[in-house]
Amino acid sequence: MTEITWRQGELIEVEIIDLNDTGDGVGRRNGRVVFVPDTLPGDRVLVRLMHVKSKYAHGKLQQIKQSSSNRIRPSCIVADKCGGCQWQHIDYQLQLEAKRNRVIQTLERIGGFAKLSVAPVLKAPQEFGYRNKASYPVRASINGKLVAGYYQKNSHKLINLNHCPIQDPRLEPLLKRVKQDMQKRGWKPYNEKLHQGNIRHISFRIGRRTGEMLLTIVAKTLILPGIKEQAQEWLDHYPQLVGVMLNLNGDRTNVIFGSDIRCIAGRPYLRENFSGLEFQIQAENFFQVYTETAEVLLQIIQSELNLQGNELLLDTYCGIGTLTLPLAKQVKQAVGLEMQGKAVEQAKVNAQINNINNVKFYAGKVEELLPKIKLKPDIVLLDPPRKGCEPQVIETLLLSKPERIVYVSCKVSTLARDLKLLCHKDVYNVTRVVPADFFPQTAHVETVAFVTRT
Image 1: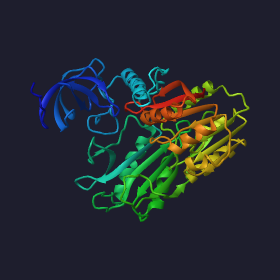
Image 2: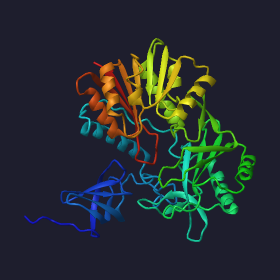
Image 3: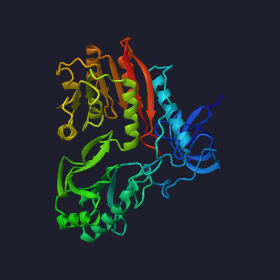
Image 4: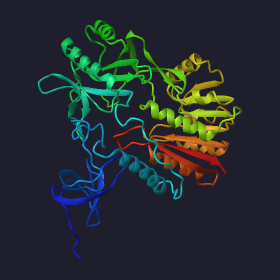
């Protein structure tokens, strides 16, 4: 039988049957897989093949022949261009179902967990207007105008924005004004190809409960004529703006922040209320972008642990104490480990302003600190970055054998990998998995897994 070939640039018609990890629609044709952005299960579409391999291809949507019953009109006028969201065209209930299915499939495919109890995805209280942080790249348009927004999908073409439906709407007036004032001041946008110009990013952060805002200008150099005067103007015009920061990033890099950050006007932190506590959060600190859903997830963790007040809790990758401090109020002693020294200093401040005295924080790499601290914790909280835990962390836990482990993950594939390592010698069992929607309108999903020693 002659093998059916396909060619780059060819137009094919395909039915979308699934969604992949990055949010693209998945179709099949003649036993091969086609990945198509901006589609969803139930769509029948005309696709141009762009990148062709022997068993799969990536395609570009040309025409919707038949729409899925779950396809909706995006709220954003540039949703088809902007790379910020993948799923504004998908009904929210299907978004939740797709995220749960991906958690189940990934835990089975990578972790080998075929019969885990995976709860329905924790629904976000708001599908839009939820993000407490936004960072916009800054570039010059063709006519030299300063623009800021998000990159077009799969490109370095910037889509200029004054409105983003997933960001907290209270930030929008400030974004427009800041761009206009920078233009008037003659501050030159950064050109990444030539490594010339100055303004690289505009970054905002807002306390969802307090309304306090921070503005950070990320620049190649500190030479911005009139920056102090302009910063004070912004503070005077926007009462909720409590600080203007200048961050120096002179490297050729796609990392947003450099290590040198200075307060130009106001104060270097905003105040936020989280789980009944007051937190001070600086521009470069990590804090979950969806405050309300993070708080509900914390409540689920507290309920599942059913803390009695006599436990020793160890929080690894603890950041500024977002989870450590609320949990410390319910245990005998808490310890937090964090690689970022500035985050540890902020965690200590947050403990002090909340009069929490039964907690200690240590700065350093978790994989190096964990074997040295000589603790026998009853509960270990893991909340690593997307890459997951370092192998040494898993090895140390298998040696120390804490009674319970709570693993909070922003990437389910590394969660599955690490859970497999924890459970492969029958030392631990995964008792419950709860996904949470921290990122509506995108394919990302947060997941917490509860692990108990056998």
